[in-house]
Image (cartoon, rainbow, N blue to C red; front, side, top):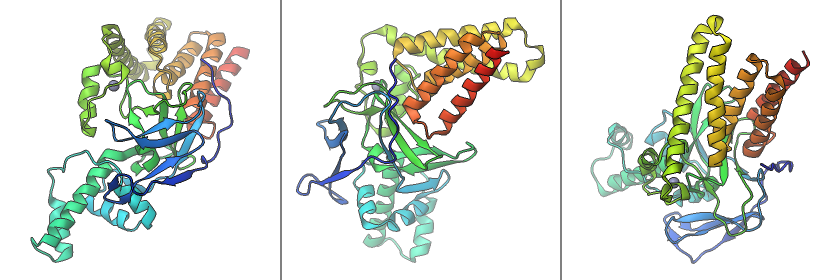
Length: 352
Ligand SMILES: [Zn+2]
């Protein structure tokens, strides 16, 4: 695994190409983003996509972006619409141009509240207004990203129009994550990406087997045609089932350990370690080297390795965690700082 150690830029310089005259959407003519690294363009089957325009090496921060809308996860249609209407014109246009694929929800209490605030009845104007609210909500549900606070205690949902244009794959080549330390969503290359290749991120947990992934992806109203979903190789699906199973086993053993740490013997740590080392092997075979997959598992290996007096290896695994966090999230992320602390812990245990 080669990691690009290029320093991460603040925000990619953007050149906005106004393609007036092309497909006219509700918010006005589409504006496609073009930077030194990638451009947005229309695809035959998956709406607008993002494509590399030059070689992007693994670990490069392709862009980072501030949210145009950020709401607490309990917010509803009325709050969303109020926020969208308060945006400057260009941001409103960005919002209304985003894809809307989720269906209106069954809960309609907000319509009564809207009617009460408008003092209106079932006139055409009111019905049009309801439709507008419904469309805004559908855009929001289709394109929102989870944003956790720095301490992880609270969760908001943010909209990032550039990231929203990146299509899904269960074998992604880029990684997206909201970084609370810089209040931006970052996109990094998970491997070298050739010019012309589409940038693809995963909207879901990629450890699930195909049947579960299909179910989850229905939310966005498409059937995934990625290499993992279309693969005739049953072995690959089998590997993902085993990975998911190992993650569950690791979590269960960790809960047990927390409850009973005083009585936890070397044999117990060995057993936990066996799951971790199986997971590392499978994830590497599957090319899953993200912070949430291989990063989590290597971090677990470090902690267990220190219990098992395998300090030399623990230092190597901690270095892997640092590399993975740099590649997926950059050196300005909280995860990178945590990985550095883990590495320091392993190094000082080695010296003892
Ligand atoms: Zn897929």
